[in-house]
Length: 371
Image (cartoon, rainbow, N blue to C red; front, side, top):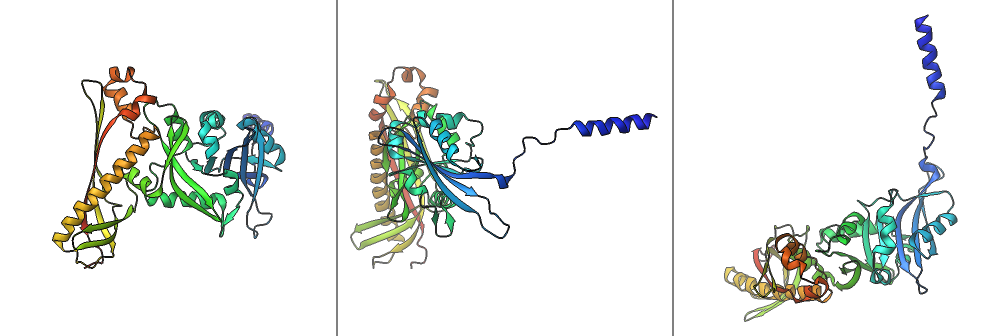
């Protein structure tokens, strides 16, 4: 009798279970892989989405569709977009968001706030990228070679990171935290559409939440090095003209550890000084001169390259101050160690007055295949 009661109770329990009532099948979803936001001429937000459409059969490949919609706000544009798309749109696979420069100049907080706060939106692995033109123009390419546009863009950004054009990898999550930090600004990958090709322009600089300037590709590499990092490669080509040493030298300072000194001090008169020095180890990959690169010549090369890169580093710092982009976190150092000084600073004005003392020391450790 007891066994029968237990069996009956178990059967009734199974009968009343509702199952996975909120389950969604991938075959019923349209997954957004890349999203772009632009500011239209009438100040509306234009959202463009690349949707991956599930294959109809196991033998057929996935397709992508591009859809755009406009709204007064980001949420309004998104709602309008969802009303036009067939099926159910989800952003769980979104890997990259492209922001048009015209929108970035107005500020990232208002248009991106809803995406930062929406729990249905992934943030930790979504890369933010700025484009000089319209984000919609890039996404509307649909494919580059055999890659869908979203896959291509993610692979391109990753490869450029290995070339030391960008660091650290900025995501929606890291940008949101930077926007809430009064003592440090950030930079984002800066791309453009030139003809049929998507090219890297360098990095877009930000003053608080607004686009304020840019560095070209080579200066972007220098910025990464000044931050104390490098990817698998960090290549420069410079002209040497010192006596018998005359020609172009291509050298690589990637993979080697960057020795960095970064110190913020405050003088008695309140002037902020920053010591920013880096030491690089490089490998010569190409030399167009005819004079042999013996030990004595290498010492001369080290001296010349150190001078050239120091000049470049100082130029990069001037561009950062001109853009009012405190990417090194000088303000954060003041907040932490000179708080009384920080309280009396108007950082929007005073950052440009910071006295940077910058130097780069290069040591060639190998001439590669050159004898």
